[in-house]
Length: 362
Image 1 (cartoon, rainbow, N blue to C red):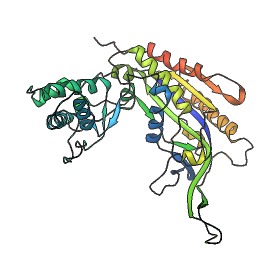
Image 2: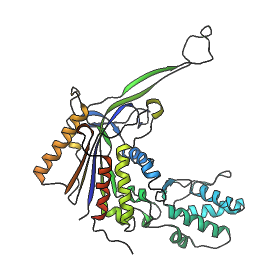
Image 3: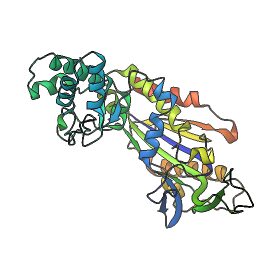
Image 4: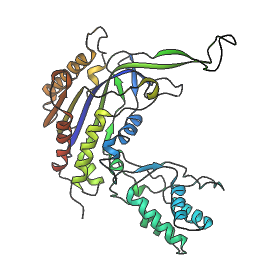
């Protein structure tokens, strides 16, 4: 049985628009028949990967999701003094390992047709092979894939969030981390901010009207976020490297508590931090606690955060009584009661990597 680490977070957001829909308004969802504000899991994972806990603490162990593989390799070859035609040809040959390519543009190396998640090892191997090809070495396409693509690639974010190589599924990675869409624990509707802007150089005598007018949607609320880590799969995805898995779990715990999608951040300056985190560790079947909020927290509550905490903990206790203890151990950080710390939560999560039975790879 795998070891799972589950995170339940409650985070209050001020008026903001961190994750927009196709109309530029905050994303929404109906939960329990009531309107809520929503943050997509994609936007949360992107924000997590952009935190210092990933950018700095996992430096050298992060993947890059991009369509610009040929462009990057061509630029690398050009800096090595490879002639332009040879650099373009070698770069496109190697980029095809990851995906089909779009039609070539004379001024720019072709993009891959899909975003490819590339590990640091694969980047280096791709550049090395491109150098050999540019030098005249003949490489078979199947052999080239064997030389560049990797299963256990040392990229923590790829190991966590998975990847799909449509044309070579042997090198796909099943995600070890599931992230739910976050939603407000209470009813919440999008509001509209009508605004105008002044033209500094226009005189009142010329025209007293605004230089620009517009409107933008925004909303505010306490969001519930759930994430679940299959620690055995994470260790396996990292080639059995438990130390790296532990480092990744520590970074993930801290990033989930502090990361926020950055939509309209310059307009709203939203920088929320989680006020409550419940981390659970064990081998039983995971379960989220979203059901605590299907009946929305009453907006007349004087403290929506505390009311949400009470709802969440009540449901966890009820499930434990009905199904038996759903986790072997639990850690809580609760700002309102001065309980716990983010460092405690991160250490608790990281320790799970040593409790798995996942085999270490040769």
